[in-house]
Image (cartoon, rainbow over all chains, first blue to last red; front, side, top):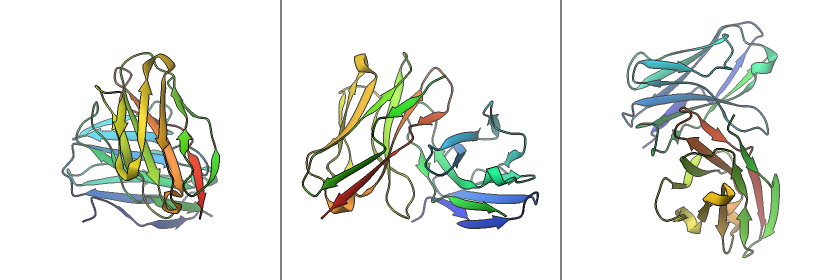
Length: 113
Length: 114
């Protein structure tokens, strides 16, 4: 009965080689989020979709992009990964913003070699 | 910018000890408050949440938290911890009029010895 699914759980990519992480949800939630969590740090929001409306956080690097082809799926594209992009990437969903909790997936751990 | 502070980076307790984890935030308006827990090898799970009403909220597994607006605090408590409570705990705040980003604290690692 997994609700927020992330694939793969572990991803290794080479410096500069584009990589895509995927997230799917069975909750039919309107909002999908992508967070970056580096070691011993708090999760940090990169961007979110409310339905098809995309919102990029002001300090999210241009290297990071996202796609949401339908309600269930959302992708994180890293165009040219650098060593500093190695992190855990968390996908989350919620019905709305205020007064709604977010449901998190297990994360994808990205290693950049 | 909004921020969330968790005062303890690593807490070590024996089973049956009482727990209190501190959380303070910096936003003067209406907030939604959350405590999430991450057990080893698992995903973030909601422990409890505060949106409005009674400032003392009860969550799963015997946890509770108290919202004290005047102190901008939302401390997590449990009267008697168990070995299975070993995990990382994150406080998070959604500032309702300041956008949609859930701001997390850096987390507190709780280690409970049996």
